[in-house]
Amino acid sequence: MEKRDAEHPYSSEFLAALTSVIAQWTAPGFLVSVAAREGIDLDSTAITAISILDRRGPLRPSALADHLATGASNVSKVLGRLDASGLIERRKDEADARATVIHLTDAGREVAAAFIRAGDGMLEELLDGWSEKERHLLTHLTQRLDTSTRVFAATLPTTPSRPQGSNESTVTS
Image 1 (cartoon, rainbow, N blue to C red):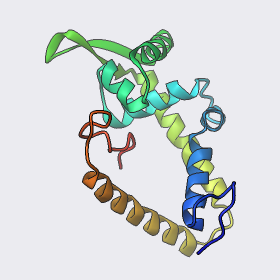
Image 2 (image 1 turned 60 degrees about the vertical axis):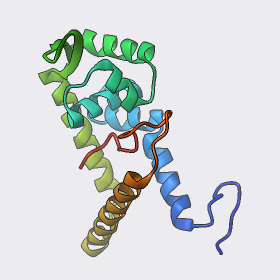
Image 3 (image 1 turned 90 degrees about the vertical axis):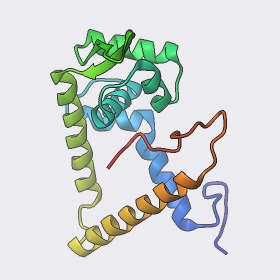
């Protein structure tokens, strides 16, 4: 049994470390600061929305709200800011003319690419001094953990508050 304390409540040191990394990497200020290194001047929700649209492709506002774990009112405000910045465009849904689908513009795709470059640069800095063998091992074990996590997520039951498909990550490989 490993030591537990207020800072590391998990019995697993690995889970404590992984939770700490996830918390840091997903903190709004961290996202904004990493993005700023590539000249991106957006709030964290806008950055996340662009990243989701880049990975998932065009989405209805309601689907984007689900991926952002926020409500229609908040996603409407975010989309308004992105639209005013020329990063997204709203198009009629071909399957339902009453609905709209959000698409990234060329400028929006460039922002998504810049954020990916910022992430790549950040990781290079974080792994500075690591050997090629250590980097390869980290990559291999992280990919293995990702696969196991996806298999586990597929076995989780659905409920009214967690419908089918909601166990999927907003990030796809």
